[in-house]
Every structure is written in structure tokens, then in C-alpha cells.
Image 1 (cartoon, rainbow, N blue to C red):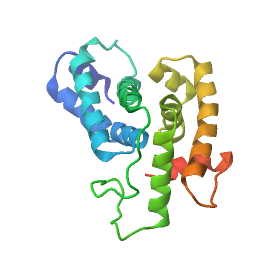
Image 2: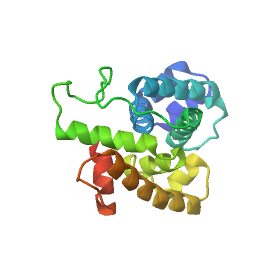
Image 3: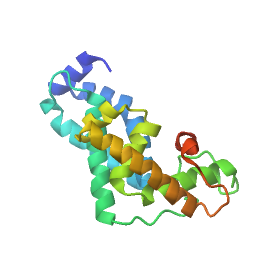
Image 4: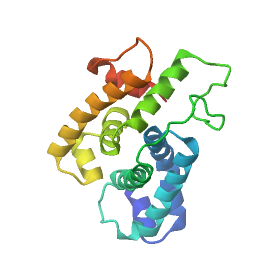
Length: 195
């Protein structure tokens, strides 16, 4: 992202903020969707994220990591939703309004089942662990970047990631109802392969 665009947005240039939105919204939406597992809710949280960003971008420090800042806003919005709902009831295995998979209800393929099982496992995990896991294994952020995004010490990131991996494997193996249990070595492939 061009620093000049960020500076223009900080100065109140709406067109510059549109450029930021167009650049970051697809990845923020994908991240939020993986955490909440519901298309409509992900749309709402993504919109809320960019509304908050628009309202407060003037206060972002010069030279700040804009991507990390946006992920922090999105993460906080997800935490709020997940905490409010306490235990999210996962969506039906096929949602007619779910446009994230290029399948119809007739295409009950292994890839679709896998994708839905990953989403279900993520929404059933403790939110703090799911956020760390998605930021690291799906979004590819380093532990230092996750520390910056979540405003937690790097040691806490390492601890949460270890617990998150265990939690995901436990929940996935429980909800998948198949003999296809996963091991720690399979984890990144499962998370990265479910779009």
C-alpha cells in the first residue's frame, strides 16, 4: 500500500480511503468469515471494520502498519460478536446464501465438506485461540505481527498458538464425524485448503 495514499486518507481524502478499502477488504472479509463462519455476519463485520477505520484513520500514527491496524479492528469486532454469542451454533453444512464456495447444493464434494468442517471447528474454538490460529496459519502473519495486531506479548502469541493447534485438532476431529482424523502435521494444509 502506497504511503502517500495512507497519508491522504489520514488527511480526510475520501478517495484515498476508497483505495484502502478496495485493497484490504477482500482479505479482511476472508479473515472474518473464517472466524465467524457465516457470510452475512462476515459482511456486517467487514463493513463495521471499515466504518471504524474511516472514522479513526486520522488518528493512526505516521508510519503505522495499516494492515495490522485493520486486522486489529476486525479481530476486536469478531471478539465482540463471538463473546456476545458465547457459543455459536454453526450454520447448516450448506447455506444457500453462502457465496464463498463455488459449489451448488448438488455438488456435495469432499472439498466442500472439508471446507465446512474447518469453518465449524473454527467457530467452536475459543475466540482468542481461533483468531491467533487464523492470523498465523491462514493469513501468514509472523508471531511479531500477531503480537502487534492483537496488542499482546509475543510469548502470549506462542502460547495461544500452541493451545489453538491442540484445540482445533480436538474440535475438528469431534465435529467431522469421520474416520479422517487430523494430526498436528496436517493442520496448516487443512486450514489453508479450505477457502
